[in-house]
Amino acid sequence: MNLYRELILPHLVHGSMRNPQLLPYRRRVLAAARGRVVEVGIGSGLNLPLYPGGVTEVIGLDPATRLAAMARRAARNVAFPVTVMEESAEEIPLETGSVDMVVSTWTLCSIPRVSKALSEMRRVLKSGGQLLFVEHGLSPDDSVRRWQNRLTPVWKCCAGGCHLNRPIGSLVEEAGFRCTALETGYSKGPSPMVFMYEGRAAS
Image (cartoon, rainbow, N blue to C red; front, side, top):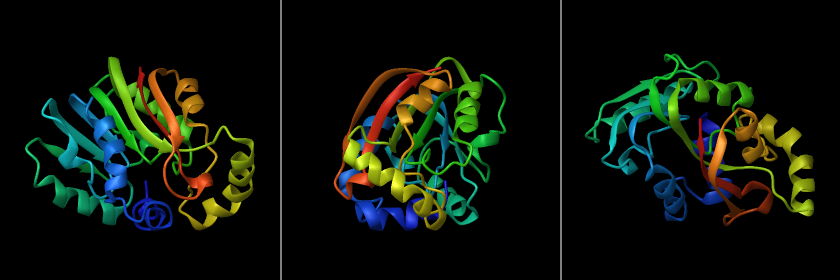
């Protein structure tokens, strides 16, 4: 949701958000997208070229002015209409039940009121709509969790609010979603930073 996510974290963890190592995550998550989509934390618009033909519209949210401007430039190169709003997922400026899908890629770690944001995502989804996500978060391994819990208080202060220890799957379900698919595991990089949650959840 911020400059840290695209400009700092990638170099610490993945080398670059454009790193081919991350493309399989993006492609798998976006392959299920259909209809009218809200992408929270659209950033510079890296996901836009990867949306499949069934997508009719993307509404991107990102409070960072610089990233939103980059996303608007990226939107010129795709066939479907894209609207980029400098807004937070905590207050989505859309009507209830007005979108088919919500997409979140490496965003939930840094939203201050993440439970409120997830509730908003569920609110704007139509009945039967889906949340598609890939995120990093809390590891099931005790030794890694201890490091995540130790590092997070300092890490979030110097890393744009990023939390290393959010239990993504639990947060999604506590917001009223039902996870219909969820894969977890480590990507390459420092273990406290790269435990991934990749899945779909029904509203």
